[in-house]
Length: 461
Image 1 (cartoon, rainbow, N blue to C red):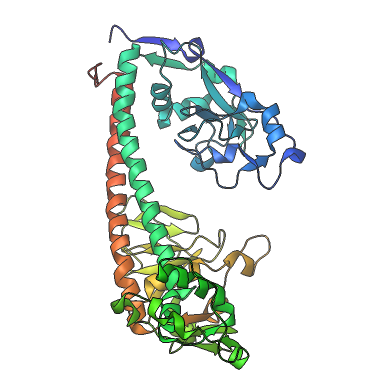
Image 2: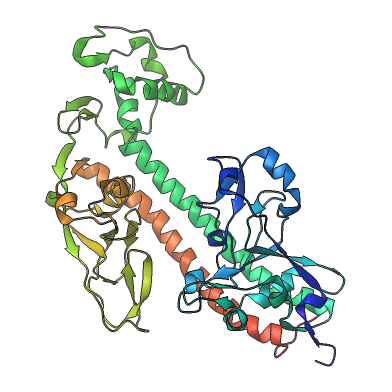
């Protein structure tokens, strides 16, 4: 430890504040601008960021972010509100010059790269202890506090030699990379599940394939999709189908028999789906023949969550409209369920397959049909609950609204096949999430030991 030095952070780096954009500078699309709310703990969330045009971005080019840049929120709350606490530190791991930073978002500019490694700096600043230091010197009101660049630069940092900084950063970075890889894998698996749901139950691809193969008529509103399916199935781009039969008959067009030899599909999949469509008056659109439309209350029991006065450190997650709040000692429900917000963020629909508790801002559901829960999850996920808001100041949803919704119900075989297929994706995701949790815990325990010097590393790592 004799080689480690306690120095002021400002000796080795400077805080650059973001550009003070005006409200009139922002547009709907363009170069993204990271605001305070986009700086999360350890990572940057580009959802709901601002945008400026290219001319403004060129004018503010000094504020374009580079790969590996470390950012900090210079305005926020105290530790009583962790999601918005001042001093949140995040690292950019994307493309250079991908976005700009707004005012009150700070960037650490390294003065001497031979004495301070930016990756080590990132890990040094992420523990809760650093945020407590920043909160303790921040100024402002109870609801909003600020910290200046000079205050951040005044922090004392216990700095090892550069080779040891890099070795520490390498170990912690390797864990971060594995965590990020698992997250990306889960994003891919979720995209696959969503894509399968859309193909089968929104675009009706297997039904269209069957109808094309058997020469059955295709509804007018599905003709564009049918043309795409012809190209996919034929394996080549073919000329648009001639319109045969009576084009006015039932609002449908007959696909030409000449295409029949070109239509091929998975026989086991095709056998589970019908080969024709019927018009449904309730939904006002064409649906696969034999499928039904039912009220949600015929398919699902919607139940109110209950307030829990003993939120603590139990083993069962307790969900609110924002996600997991804390953990409790006993569950309110033990089976698969879809959680639907009753108040607050109405579009935050969640699938849960372990015992849980749900508070009164969150509905939980019990299925009345077999193999229905995952299909139901993706069905309600594509609905815009925020547009059905019953409240004014606080967005809210009611059981009456939910129960009266019309739900398309595929055949039992289709539901069973979908459940079996996506369950493989879900199981893999759950395994990845469990590994992410283990890696997070490992990193969080190892990090303070490494950056304090209590655990030393080989400088050659």
